[in-house]
Image (cartoon, rainbow, N blue to C red; front, top):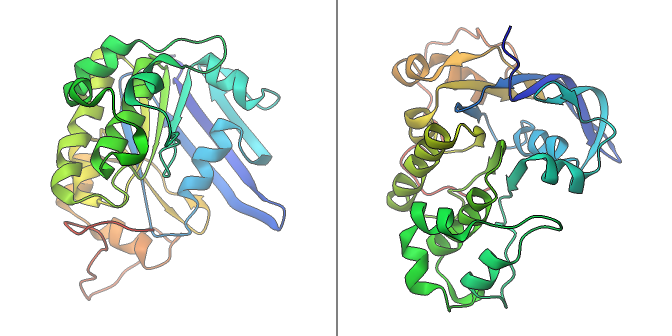
Length: 256
């Protein structure tokens, strides 16, 4: 039996005021792109933070290639091969692009050539500070830093945030190509539903801190009924409704 690169088993996690996740089960295999879809507040970003160790896990397990991360510090999870690109991009406004690509996490280096290979536009702006870059350039830099670490698992949280759809259309295929080339497992949170399903292999729907079963991304893209149900409030994933519901952020600029 093949071990998934990332496996989340009955995850329960949250903050001081109580749990946000009440039972999340997700697997991501090497070289696979898996999307988490659902409305704001469903628990998608919280799931990524729990995987990275940024919030407290209250139950369940997070496994990296079969190894339980329950007692592993966030810094050690990063060294083990988990790269997390948060929705705020995690950049330092006063550092240049080149400096971002030279300064890796403790005891790690960033392969600048990989960053430049997938985002060649970064070379021409390597002497600019992150604070003066456009939103698209900042996102390329944040993703370039993650790719340059050659991760085993990459977590991407709303890379489209504040970006025009045409820019997102250029970024998401890079994610797909990197996963295919490197064998990296990618877990993607994205509100541009159709664009996410266009590059993903599988998808999970999230609502009220609970995940659905796994769905083939191509099937979902051609029949949005289940996705619409998740936006109506799930977690009864087989919600039966007759009226068409316009999903947010499909072909629109995302904000959260």
